[in-house]
Amino acid sequence: MDQAPSPSQTAGPYFHLGCANPRPVRCVAGPNAKGERVRLICRVLDGAGVPVDDSMIEIWQANAEGNYHSPDDPQEKAVDPDCPGHGRLATDENGSCVFETIKPGRVPGNDGTLQAPHMNISVFGRGILKRLATRIYFAGDPANQEDPVSHSYQTSAAIPLWRTQTLTKTAVGILISTCAVNMKPCFLMYKGAPRLSPIYDLSLSSLSDSGFAVPVGGIDAGALD
Amino acid sequence: MQPMIKVIPYGRHDEKGQPTSLYPAYGATVRRAPHKPLIVLPHTLSEITGPVYGHDDIAEADNDLTRQHAGEPLGERIIVRGRVNDDRGRPVPHTLLEIWQANAAGRYRHKRDDHRAPLDPNFSGSGRTLTGANRCYPFVTIKPGAYPWDNHDNAWRPAHIHFSLFGRAFATRLITQMYFPGDPLLFYDPIVQARPDEQARQRLISTFDLEITQPGWALGFRFEIVLRGREATPFEA
Image (cartoon, rainbow over all chains, first blue to last red; front, side):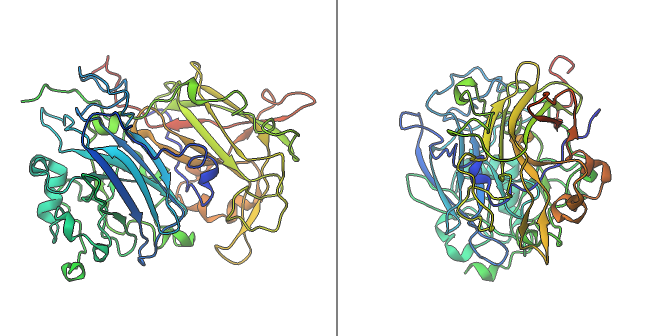
């Protein structure tokens, strides 16, 4: 490494000026895109359960064939021009925003595997010094059993992350795992301290307990009933 | 069995070079920072790809914040220029940069900014551009003012411009801030101080550059941005 990467800084409370207002992207996949239509309702809560009304959520996802609209995707599959796969919205006074998209297909993983359908999520905002990265998987998809990321959370967490219907407002703190299919809204939730959410770190050089066996941690199962 | 996809990952950050997520002196981090260890995710196609923008996304005056209204904004006109490289010094061409900032009086054109300073009808405070094939970007704007915030007693943010960059991949996405050299407020600002490493802090501060400065018209500042790079080029692999 010749030059250290530039340090991250918070987007602050006024990011709408530069990012979300001039370029909101609610429609991640257009009405003509191939695939199952999905409406994704995201809700961001802080560690006290208070809706975060000044955060921004970005989505990056594959098309229905599991192909990314990017020159760095080497797969020999047709690009779906109606599925750019990128979304970006600010959260409203309820901490919420709503994306229209399709369920992505399975993207190749490393070592000849296939990943379960998922969306890649970034959260920015006031008080967030470094981008929070995570994924959303689709409840009930059998492919989750085969995916090293989703499967480990399913087995290591104290709660069944994939039972979407049980994830009501009492399930505060689960960032990963919920999504809407067939236009039925569910919730993506992000919670700060006490941290319950698995937040992926795409930047740290190493962590002592890296790997997928790290439990989501700290979950009081009773809090979900 | 799926066809093998060769993924060349992006480099991992040196922790010292990045802020900690939790920095209690910056009060808003207390309820918003992860409290559990983060999980390192191996890079897959999902992380090494990202949205691509083109010149269709950019209008002609988007990178000149002094020409977006009928009149010129008040304040000290400046040129901000720099390169976008990866951490091995390789250029990152054709990447989208978006900026936003306060006006010369330290006020954002934003409904939530209630600082008792005037708005400027000739200044919106947002711009965007793409790096060219030569990896350079230019902005023309006015120097933003410092402004108070309610983080602690007598708290003031140093003058800064917010920068948002995509790079080529989900893994390279970056939002940062550019500061100005010699600003006494930098020492007191918990957002600047939220990183342990002095060298890292220095990378957030632009440098005055007489070569960028245009005689009789505008001062020039250089702000170099470094994104994470892939560990090897595909040709090296």
